[in-house]
Length: 278
Image 1 (cartoon, rainbow, N blue to C red):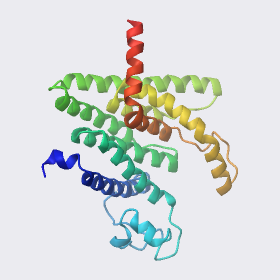
Image 2 (tube, helix red, strand yellow):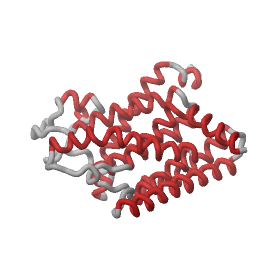
Image 3 (tube, rainbow, N blue to C red):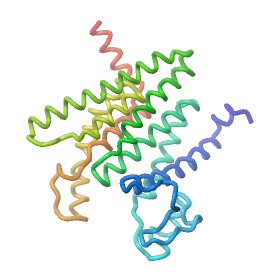
Image 4 (tube, rainbow, N blue to C red):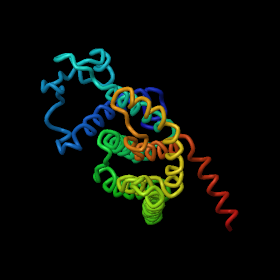
């Protein structure tokens, strides 16, 4: 079977799903270890009690189900985050595969991975590492150049300029929003990590996506804040609405929604605005 036949065949979708689940398992490791400055490669996966996890119980999705959500060695309850992230990543990769050529899948697959890891760390620690945001912006510029080379006939300069424009506009718009919000609320409303994340998003997908991610992420955050507040208050001590909810994951979700579902509509909307403005 030729490569393009395989790429468009349902069996490739199965392979992509399994790949996405494996990547989700790796992202779980990154989320747990990067904030602690531990290598994501060594040592091998271990339970919280310190015992190594057998490889056959470390199989994405299946391992969690076989264990029934509890560690085999000590009986501790495993976080639902593990299986959720594996399934979520697998589904994202399949959706991306259905609408992308191989080069787009490679570049945007890396983009999704950065967003997932940065969001997971933000939820866990209320911070985002520069390797995911600043490093992601550099990868975004390189990825845009790569896509421009293969899809636009070697117009790599245009790809680089579009990425830099998206990076600067995305981060600067959110920075000004953060400044005005801080003046109005008399406290920090948007972290600088979110600003750097917007630079990464803009570098990968451009100015239109950056603007959509800011306002789309804000809307998603407003929808999610009350259910999440209720959930946190059931499990922990009472918390204030503005004290626990990071903004970065909603910016990331806005970028993912743009790329997978709203890209054509948003691009057409901005095109109409450009026509009206002359």
